[in-house]
Image 1: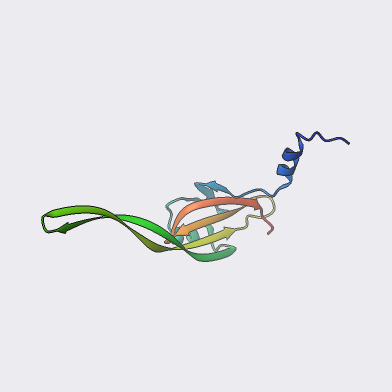
Image 2: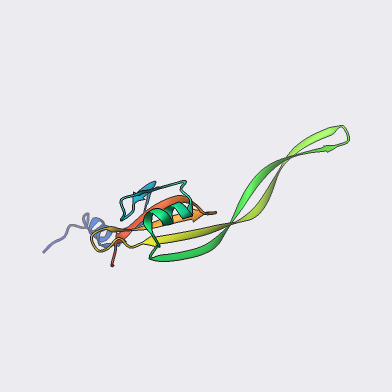
Length: 121
């Protein structure tokens, strides 16, 4: 069997595992919808307990505009500050006929829902 060298990259791409795809929400096994902006308690009520939970803290830099007055002179400067954001990721394994869903929370609010590969449950 001969394979054209032009097709080789395509075949290698197809052989790789599927990447996580970002969504704005998903439907729980109960049929209820989870969307970006929902609170952690709401997701738990709608979908039940996740199959796995991962927690981490991300450090991010934020900029603030500060206005200072020195005598009669007023100046505006931008100060940079590092803050810590708690991140929680809930995994819902939807079984071998559906994709795994990852619900990502920042400060207890859904900021992203990602779709993984087929589940195993």
